[in-house]
Image (cartoon, rainbow, N blue to C red; front, side):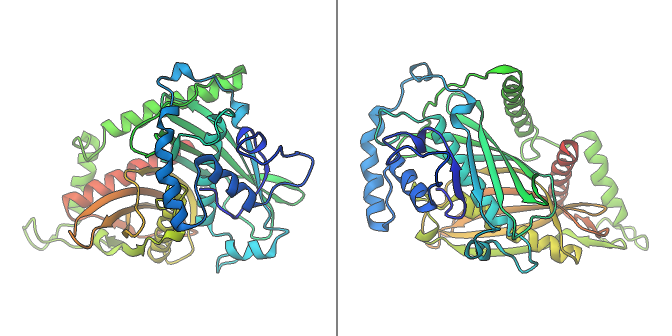
Length: 426
């Protein structure tokens, strides 16, 4: 669902061509306001602003299943420029909008930016799959993974306009990779702020089965490089999943690290494996947690009648930031968002439990993992919905995080892996 917080400047098929729009948008004329953009997005899937009507509209989508392609070969090939979108966030010229983004440190609430990126990624993918012959799209496009968000600038000014650009860079059979860039107007020019890569998946109208998407044909050397990078990203994700510490044992080098941590915490006054002593300038991992709970109200729903993924990212980021702030004793700055996995959708009315854990530290850096799960109050069953990884940096060295149990040691190693990947991409 497109966030109401940034104003659209340029789009393609889904916004400029009937039947999804009420008429063509002139690139030289006034950009449509967000209510128009959101209405057009709702038209794409047949959603409604009214909660009661919204449920009925989704039920009516069941009849769209026969419009799905039987194979990818049935769909026309798209180009990268077909999905190109540019959007502006006029913080410098809209004081009312600025208030929604302002944090108490007189900066920009990055959680709001995450919501906007998620919305923009969905819109990019609908532009790629747009079929002007259909009144409504039979596809349900949802976020599967935030592959990477790399910060190029630490300070985001709350009173300067922001520009988002993005387009599809890689396509599988049923998945789409969208790359986005954010820049801010300051000092007379736009300067880069962040680069983001999202992976979206297409589902049937009931959001139950995978659905085919249009193939992508790169044009020119630069687009070929982007497409090949998408293939590399896919391979890397498979390799990381295969080597997950939830599936296989740590490497020999990682086992040495864990044993070294264990030896450093043994009480030299006793000859016991159970007597543990916290080293100087260190914190037990157990004491570096912050938890939260959210009741998922209909207000935070997306166009598919589930909780908006951007809302989940915002809540997870803010909890992770608070944890890093408390741990480091000063304001942390975000370095990267890495490997946010959307395992299961969050239903309206869910009790969402969020648990933030500092899992790795090195010098001025703090690696935070946020785990979210839904709790069924009747059965008391817990189901994991998302796992988030954030890398923060402070202006001073932070205490060393120290695991005690084997499970905490695995969290430590997993955090170290994510931290190393972040450094490699910088």
